[in-house]
Image (tube, rainbow, N blue to C red; front, top):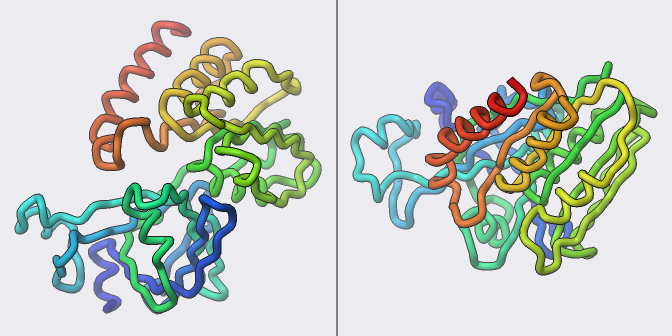
Length: 279
């Protein structure tokens, strides 16, 4: 895609290779000239928004999402899917994204399963806002599969020997991954089985004993369990807001579009609840 497309915020990348990390997690490595000037080394929760046009719809280049929404009918608008940057190798110009795969369900998962070297994908980004504070006394990392890429990136960034408590919920033992770190990390894998999303996470985090001192926490995943853990961390443990990166990446029953639409009001409700509780 022409370099001028970057002025619209849209880039194009080419699939270099893919790999199945677990039965339901696919790694896609992207490259190509469209990544020239791309930077994603500040935060460990950097993310990009993949752009999927409807079948049979082609957009003029450079692709301009604002123009598309002004000029085309809604059914011709692209669908966006948000994915964390698992790794960015500026030397090789390689961008690594991990996809949770639920069979034919969804949009990006099936795309990743079918992706082959040479395929192209458009995206915007990166965004982001969290990286583990190297001066914190200890770190708390909590999430489900959707947060695994950011948790893995954060673990790689943690200083040598710093204490970390890590809780990750996945479907079963086959979905566990090796997550390298130099930190002194206590890793707890929780298997969902047929329980509701996040139930095991809330139970385990509430039952844990944590170190004293300044914590820097990262809690992301399904919105309902994130809300429960926010109540605990802010309302009960009084973790300062500035020491907590916490957000619902997704919500049961919503696709990405409907959750993006509902999320601002959801966040307002959570913040109002928090203000009423702790002032």
